Length: 529
Ligand code: ADP
Image 1 (cartoon, rainbow, N blue to C red):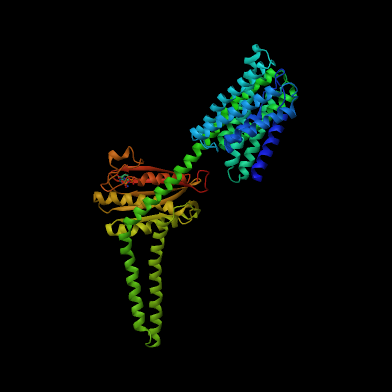
Image 2: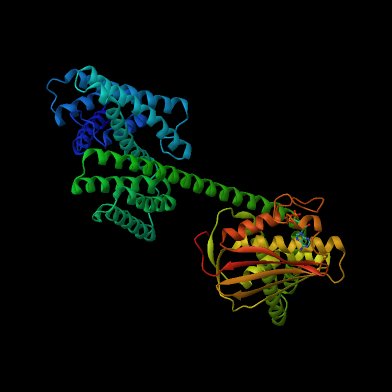
């Protein structure tokens, strides 16, 4: 037996007894049934995390708590039997969840929350029935009070499980990084809203507390919608503690408290379900975004592959010029001093040409290479210049005039440079494809950009044939293409990339005189970016 196991067992026993002690309020007749039974939640969390093999420890804890918290004289046998039934039933439940339904102890999916709550409803019903049955058999409770007693037991255990088990399970695995100061401020505000709702429910004299109870739904739903499952478990805990404090201060009788706990149970389960759905939705949106970044990378590779021939041709020029200048310099060195000056000039031009070739290669490498996002302040004019440099060789080969009219004084935008370049390159290449296919006279593509409020709008316009009718309806859908070799992914990727930056992309016009696509990007980054 190792120290860790002993430590866990001792901590479990201590926390169990403590929870049992502080929750031992408003009990039902002589039976120790309380409207709030957090030890049940602790038991289930232990059995789910550590396995049903820990049932003996649960039995021990239940018996120990009975001895320390309540007077056991005369009820040792029924108490042992109820402790046994508690351990066996919850161990059985945890066995089924762990082995047969692929239950995730981090409650990462909605289905895990549904499994946890529905199986707990059945298990605690069984534990409650056994509990009152055993005490009735021992003559401690009259048979006609069995059903109310079992119902109360069920509510107490269920609310204990609904509040405590998810709290332990979620905080153990899923504490979400460091919260931002904004999150902390919002969480405090939401905590305040829960307190205010409790105050309204219980603080107003003569008010109908049951009717006002529904006010508590608002802050809890708010927390779950904003912070997902982590928010849900914390909000449930806060609301439950607030309720208990309110019961103690206002001094309700046990029946009313139990009725409130039933409402609280409904609220806790609703909050958990919403929190889990929100967390699951966020995770799949993040996964989708990651897939789209991958897809954008792959599409960039294929675009770059297609551009490579034209770029290789373009690179040839500065390299040939470099060689010519170096050769001239070789011939000139060693001659008279005037020749040496000419030689130096030739060397300088050689360096300049080599640099130009290097720049072209660098921009191609950047375009291909990166698959993670880097948002940095970028000048719109530089962005367009880089994108056009990549498309220029092909445009020259096809005799298409590329022009850019960008005001250099436009403010910087916060973007991933490579991705927005990819959008521009895609739009320009689409325009060139259309011009080429239609054999347009004096083909031209114009790229422009201007500021519009807090956005910069980019436009890519051509004087081509316009978009084919059969394509327009589903223009931005994937695999929609009019080209024999087309993939039909370009525009859908462009739209995804722009929207990931908090912007928007749309078809501005498409007519016989030409097509124009516009997209706008915010100057300051938004939350979605
Ligand atoms: P792909 O280029 O692989 O076909 P896109 O999603 O980039 O995929 O484009 C979808 C279709 O939209 C193209 O096949 C073409 O018919 C049409 N299209 C896009 N841009 C233009 C344009 N500037 N002029 C005419 N048609 C265009």
